[in-house]
Length: 164
Length: 192
Image (tube, rainbow over all chains, first blue to last red):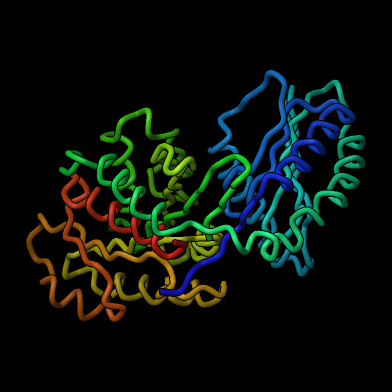
């Protein structure tokens, strides 16, 4: 059976990302930051006391961002590299880090959009190389047969007695 | 493709319900949301029209718990079935690990089923995916109705990949979890 390879994050990559997100949070004065995959799955977050429902946020943000890419295509634009929603008390900024990774930032009226954009752009320059070449670095890491067997049992247990 | 976060000890798989309009994709996901232990699921997100037709997608995260030290999740999505929403379907398919093709068993829906099945192949090929390398289950829904195709006929029409086929009635829940169970195991097997 052919093996499928996905986006794999290791300890080193996550430490680098967490460190950078914390710095970006402090320097921009933003409330919540998250790295997510372009298929809508969260990778890591940074926040002090604001914790939105991350799974739904990641799914919706990735879908919205994907839709803007299609809008760009319809408008004969190569790509739109960021998505911005302005609210009364909070704002949402989504930007592309790599082919597989997006950066979400929420911030309030106490900070400025320009500041967020400026520092985000700089942060992306640092974040991008962290994910480039990740496949080679992680090639030895894999979901093995033992994991498959244990997960199979867990799936049977989770869905036991639920059939209509 | 799954997101494997070794640092955070997480694995996330993406499963998409595909099929023509009104075939029962959203009904499947709503039944799962209703019946599964609330501690094992997240919020059901639906982007639908005022008539409750899916406009973009439904989304339901399920947690399998910790397996070999890895928090394992399945993210379930539906696509909008109506043919003119193909741009949205392409977006939802990005990064998919497994597909449940929900077929409407009614004889009157033959053309829509075939069109949707071919559309699935077209969209996967366009994004560089191969259905034979993904988890794939065909669910023959609405088996409780009259004037329906036989399983053999639908199999011949829609199952040239020789994939697992489950008879279902998503409204009552028949076959809903059986279908999901198979595709969940498949997507793990494809990466193991």
